Figure 1 (cartoon, rainbow, N blue to C red):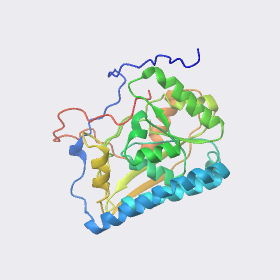
Figure 2 (figure 1 turned 90 degrees about the vertical axis):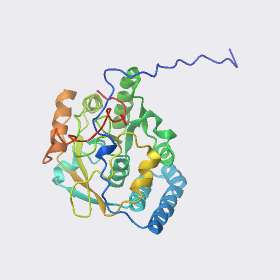
Figure 3 (figure 1 turned 120 degrees about the horizontal axis):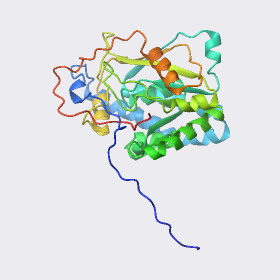
Figure 4 (figure 1 turned 60 degrees about the horizontal axis):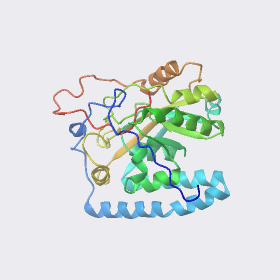
Length: 304
């Protein structure tokens, strides 16, 4: 019937056994990092506004040329990283043959520390991101998320998970690049979670090679820092305000040999986790002595 309105079915907003969580809380955030003067914070904010002013241009050129869209997107991400005050160092450890396997379609996977990971990986290679469903409603970053056409996933609605995996597979079949954070929530970086296998099914189904990415943040002394992590009860506004004041932080990215999709998503997840964590020293007692009270709030939905 014309003009009729169908009833909308709303999934119950409840926790379940597959909800992602990490023990990382606000006590994990490094507070001793150097800070810039107030005038530099203002300058950084102005540069960030300039970067967001490029969004309409990105949309227009994206209609004309996907190649131009990627170039403008990468430039905008690098400009935002500059505004935030985070440097970027990329170490490509792949051979020419290994690089060729992910030149077109690819699934990129990395550990997840902060919302800044999205800027870092976009500056590296513009892609579609699988992100929490409410990201589009966030201040500032929501605008960027909508422009990048993220694939939302709702952590409390397990029944929507297969549909998201299918969407990732469709993007890969079309020759796109998709970024997934398989831990399904943020950790502080000095401790981390395991890679959940669900999203790897998209790579198996489409026979797409997977690119593990090693990502960590270091301070001015080249020591790993948790200053950028987005964990615990900190809001996105508080996190943006705090990170805008950081000084000397650099994101170190390493690209290792891509992994063949194979036929088993769990095996693929294990192989990619091993590649992404190679060389890291995971200390299960890293949170000892930190008064967390409760588990840190999950930042992303489950992907297991």
